[in-house]
Image (cartoon, rainbow, N blue to C red):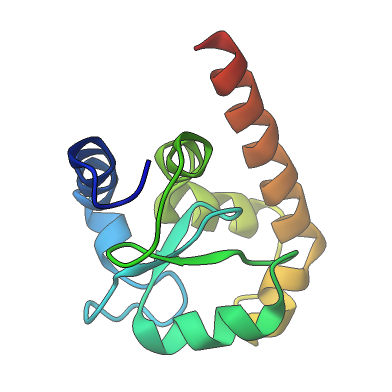
Length: 127
């Protein structure tokens, strides 16, 4: 399934309709929030997408909402994640807000990635 399919577009649009997912998780911009980190389940702007790409896919697997193909598992990451849930989790686990590289390499971010991955796998198995 790619983002060009009606189902994928609909699912991504539903997740993006949340006001917290309409702002960049890193810089709070409302401009061009058309990028996402699949393994973090978060949305960000085009400027921060380049920074996330520089972190490496083990920390942030970057996809374009409009240009890249999305499979069911990737869509589940976005549906089960979200900027608000991730921000709350990182705050609870005392992850640094900046610099961006430290934030997403922190123990709190790693715990978030692991928790989200587990939730996605459980949801995929249960149907």
